[in-house]
Length: 97
Image (cartoon, rainbow, N blue to C red; front, side, top):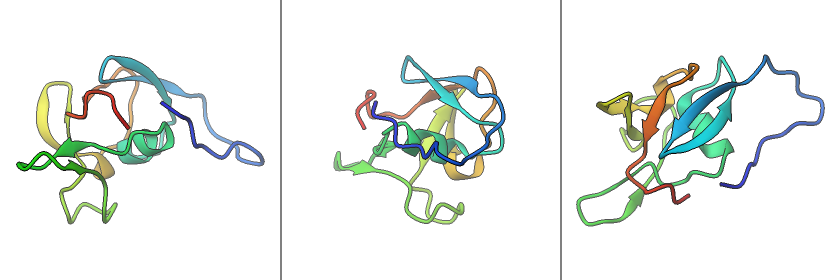
């Protein structure tokens, strides 16, 4: 996964580790899971019934395009879910961004 975070001039709290499709990813308390995934290069959060990749569209919980599995719970809106240490995320994209 390619990191796309801005680092110069940005102060953040200590990072936490989350598991995304079997890979360890650093995220920051206070950010949404969608922001953390996008910052690490994940673009496909799920696939439509026709197989097309889907990702965040509205980033405010309205469109439901950012659904992922978190700790075994399906249908979690990544844009509305704050990151926390140790969460296990399955995007349904097989780790492809």
